[in-house]
Image 1: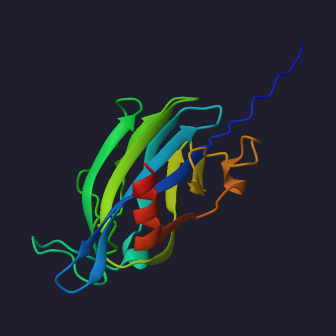
Image 2: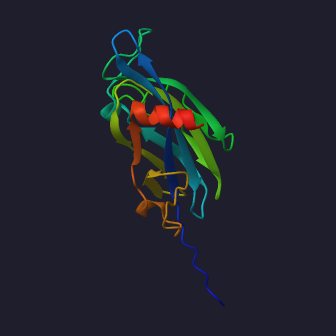
Image 3: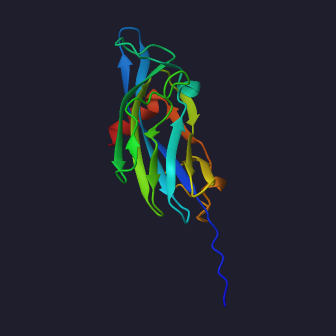
Amino acid sequence: ATTITLTIEPVIGVAKDADVTDFDVDSDDATVGPFEITFDFYLENMGNVNLTNVTMTDNLSTQFGTLNVSPDPLEAGEYEIVSISKVSGPTTITENGAFDGDTAGDENVINTGSLLVGESAQIQVVMNVFDPGAYTNQATAEADGPGTTTTTDDSTDGSDPDGSTNNDDPTDSDDPTPISLDAVQVSKEAQIC
């Protein structure tokens, strides 16, 4: 008789892409801001077992400042969430409408969900940031496999959770996503489009 041993390998992968889509020049006080940033998160079950209790968190306040929850316009040192939506993926993954990225608030980008082997999902967050500058940001995905097995991954820049390694191990691709908020650069890019 031949003995076949199957290894349970739960593997969650996550990538994050950023696109600076707009900025506003405030003529009243000659300051620049806010900038509009669109983040796309790409989740994928890259293992050989189904995943449950899939979560993804993203702390925005450590990079972008104080969460603006009032109806007042953004001020220096503040950011706000404009929208969150699921672009694609199974019905078992849903975006968290209460996500605000604040350490004192709700850092959960998705409500807990599940992914079958090979399934993927894309979540999009649009936010405004007041201050120009160079930033980096990273999300973290976690999930449970069968029994007590777990998997976690820090996002890598781009849309492929496996990054540039292409070895089905997303844990070795964890480059934070760079975001450059520069009014001159955004203006030039907007004119080219």
